[in-house]
Image (cartoon, rainbow, N blue to C red):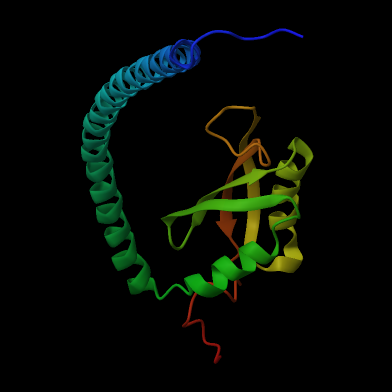
Length: 199
């Protein structure tokens, strides 16, 4: 059996010394952890600030570009509206039933095609049409359907051109475009109000 003959004051001193060493270790660990956290937060804030400045610069450039493009787009829209008004005056003078005409044309479009434009060159003569389609075959079927005499719309429909491409500006579901020229059927019941017939 071993006897501890150290005085109580010395034993207490050793105990305090051990605790102080442990506390110093914990204090050092906490200090370095906080230092690391501060460095990480500082780096994150600097990176975020740089990203914000970069995004702000990109937004400013995009807004400037949009303003420039908007001006050109507005001019084009004003011209389109002017052309549409001129056509409307001509159309109203001839009393064209556009709602019935467009409904009849739309109902004869084949599945997988969409009518995208319809421009009347001369109300009494003909028009140009454009449509998009899922395939080349569907695009050509548009001409076949509209040229069918049963529709009573057109006496003649010719394909101006058909193009299919995977251009980024095109809808990937409708990669083909067809442009057509058509002449109205003289007995077209969907075109004029006054043809000696009562509705």
